[in-house]
Each structure stands twice: as C-alpha cells, then as structure tokens.
Image 1: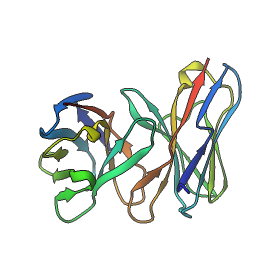
Image 2: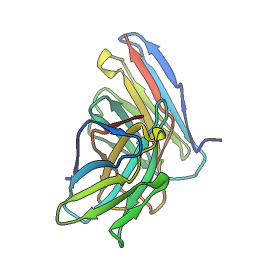
Image 3: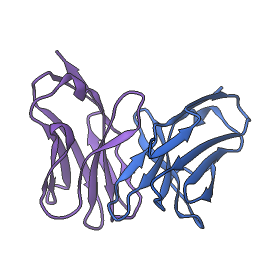
Image 4: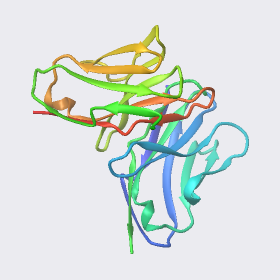
Length: 113
Length: 112
C-alpha cells in the first residue's frame, strides 16, 4: 500500500522568500511522484513529476523537487515566492505509470507582501 | 475546449435526492477517475475505470455508483444524497504511460 504525508497544512511565506513544502511517502515499489497545484475555484494542474532517472526534477513556474529514496521524501521548493504562488499544493504517489494516484492532504500556501 | 469537462459546476440539493455528476473528455484516454476533495483530507478516490468494461471501487465508494457510457464519458451518481456527501468532486483522466492525471474544474455539491 502507498501513502503520502504532507507536513504542514498551512504555510505562510514572504514575497521573495524560499518556498519549501514537505512530502514524505511510503511505497512498496519504486514510486512515481507528483506535485500538483490548485488555484482558487480551479482544478488541479501538474507542477512536476518524478518517474525514473534524475532525482532533481524541475517543473513549471520555477518550482523544483528532489527525490530522496533514503529519506522517502519528495520536497517541493522555489527560491523566491511570488504573490501568484498562493494556492494549495498536493503531493501524490503512484506505484507505476498506469495506476491510481494517492494524494496527500494538501498544503495551503499564503504569500505576504 | 477543455480536455476534461464536468457538469454541473455547482449543485445544491436536498437529502434523499438522486444526483448525477457528468464528466466528458476529448483526449481519447482510457483511464478515468472520480475523486472527492474535502478540506484537510486532500483528494480521495471514489471510483476509477481503465476502459469501458472495467469499473473499480476506490477507497470511499459507499453511497456512490458510476457509469462508463463510452470511452469519453464517465458519470458519478449519488442514489440518495446525504449531507456528508457535500464536497468538491473532480473527474480526471490519465495520460497514456505517463501516470499524470488531467483534472476537470470540479463540481461543487451541497446537500442540505
């Protein structure tokens, strides 16, 4: 069975500061890992994903995440927060490229001027 | 046009009523999903379908049913709605061999 834990349901960052969202997973097989973002009144859209290969993954809007197998983590970072980054972020895990995704509870990001 | 379209976008209904949420896609993908989103709980899987003849229960299927009318259409029904089914419902399709989900914009259901 697979599961995802996102540390912190709410994160507040200042504009221009580092954004760090934490995600830990459990999986019995090498995982496929995803970060999604949800803006108000919208569906989820993919930020980035890890399948195989390079462990540092770059996504849209300046976000990146690093897969660390030894720590079972896939933390999301952005060096400098923008006001437009205010949204809810979800980490998800799957056991393969065709299976269902298990989502974390989400982290709401607030960006302050 | 959106890849995944959900109707209705908003619905208010009363306890005991039958409700259907519809989902259609234009990408021709086989795999379709229904998720439910509640604050603090993330997205939980209700049902999923890997093709027209394949329907599977997710982690919270009780009180829900689905119909895959065609490759492009996947409907979610609440036979007798209850207040704790008030939530935001998402339909998603899965990319071929990528694992990535593409989501509709959601259907917000309120059961009074």
